[in-house]
Image (cartoon, rainbow, N blue to C red):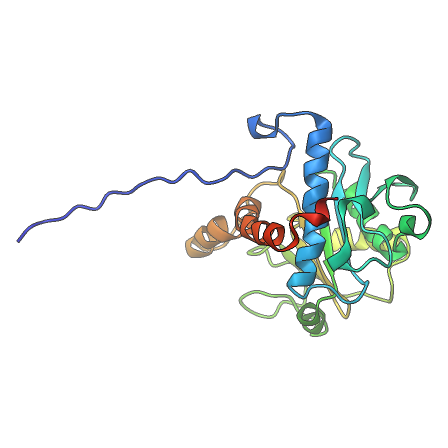
Length: 252
């Protein structure tokens, strides 16, 4: 009998680009801003492609890398599958559109979207981006009044996944107080929250440490598939397909 040996090979995987710090993030601020705006516009197209949009409901925001006290948001009334970089609005915490958008109605934004995203970007300065969806399955699950996990959890946090349940939805979010309550419901992990009878919301927060997981198996699975870097890596295939399908017109 002959014995065989197996050798392990390492693979250099693409690196996460958040343009916060590190050698991969070097470059002019305007180039960083442009890259992230293109990613944001593309995210709306991908939300539509994956069925996460509902007519004109829902919103995604991104903190501006040059002015961290501002964030970019989609304008009101523009379908996700039509959004381009030139449609995006840069808004300050007072609600003023300081840059972007098209003249006239193109600079109108959703008041509920502003209330939610402004509160999160102000209360959680390490959050880079926030996505809120009224997807069919997300809304259906939110009506159950429970969290995800190994068992039902009506109290909120599920540390294994960094998700929580916000069960006090009383209608459209039109003031900052409700937005602050959503921030509180997200808890210390800040990865996402289920808005009961409303939808779902997730946040990208690369500055926070790994979750304190119970059980070695769960910890390994999360480190492999649940972190921001792995999510970014898997998204590259989606963006490559989007570029091939649209010829990159969303970057205009």
